[in-house]
Image 1 (cartoon, rainbow, N blue to C red):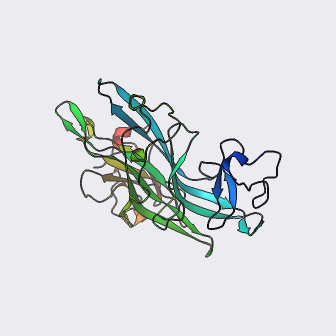
Image 2 (cartoon, one colour):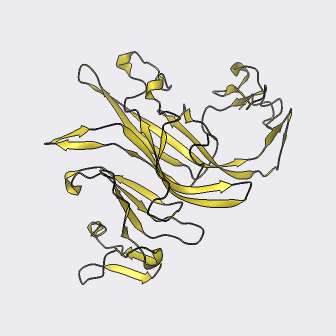
Image 3 (tube, one colour):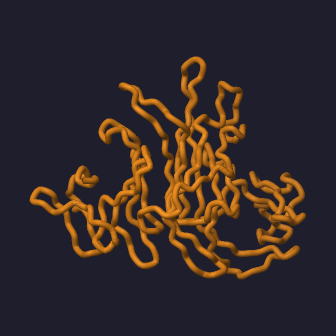
Length: 314
């Protein structure tokens, strides 16, 4: 991201800088690790795959009862390709690079300007890819009015961790949470006019406020699964629930469905499991009026024309 006419090879004059004005576009001149060298870097997350993305809806009620709302995007982890290491004034290492699971976290309110609220390699949260992230907003019902109770939370579930030194893969079944502020970062009524930038630290999640809920959930460790948050409503008895579905590990593909009630300390429950999962079978039993198919011990599912109302816990 330096001047386009200069080469882009890391460790050469094309990427080194002395000040931000030496860099091209929105890139910034930043220090290179523990060295005195500086390079032009893009102020956003690095190219990656199998990261997780979650969107939080923030709002503030102004003194005149008007509401200002802002959506914030969160990007967590993923796999990056490390191609070079720095050796004095030159770059070294294999030209094709190696795969690395990253553990950083970024946020943006416009998709263009990004802020890193958790640095990489902090030894707090294991780098991973193929995980899922959810925004959970606690609330409760008072008569016909829904009230907010507590701050929003970013939940991170499972995934796949890589160790490039030992060349092994670890599948995870942990659950992490990060407390999130609920007010927008830039509120015009407070004097903020540039909504593209992060203007105050009070709107940022803490880099150290990462807490593990469990290192070992009831569902088997996996990656590339899907998770969905079901907010409380009258149709679900005002429960907050998370559904985790499918995924894979080194030995199998999963076709199960797990639920977790956030309102108490309940454990994860398997609502829809295959026989060989090592868990008590709880999926729907075939009846004359329920079209449920089961092909083998490793495959249990609803038919395409089955009502979604049948896919629930019994």
